[in-house]
Image 1 (cartoon, helix red, strand yellow):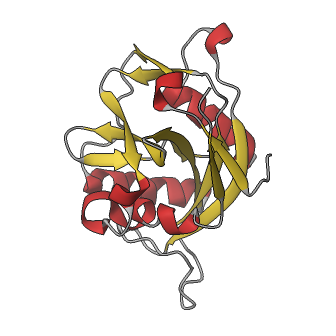
Image 2 (cartoon, rainbow, N blue to C red):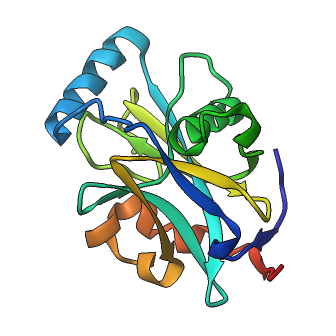
Image 3 (cartoon, rainbow, N blue to C red):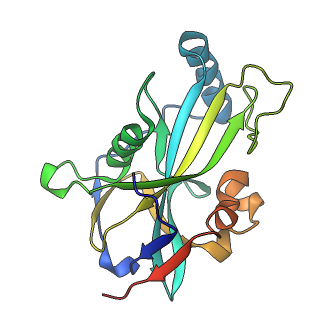
Length: 200
């Protein structure tokens, strides 16, 4: 795990992007997703998920890499941990599943940094909070966001049914309607870091 207040960001053009087989979503609707979450909760208890904040730069401004599903929905790369799985190792596994090529020689060297946010889902609903409400004794999901320090060159393989977007922080900031509360508050969470814009 890397802990540093300085985040080196490299130009988007430093990275190579390819494609791989589609990564189909397990659910076709939000209702299906919440229903599956309920079934899994009955079997395994609290759902723990991890997501990575991958930063690049364009025009000397930090951009975050987001996966776009369909025309509107964007999400951070990551996902649910297996029961008992280490958060850092689980995030590396999820990042590779979402963004790494199938070839072992092209696997990115994921450098996981600090946990910058923790979000809680009190009930089987879409709403999440950056705290667990005091009257909730059995939250349904805990989601942690980690900073991921990228090296100056990587190869990313994006599933064919998804798009990988580089979205500037100013576009995300306070844009709850477009990106939801978790992603739209990332600029505030990153404000304590110093971005070192590197131009190789």
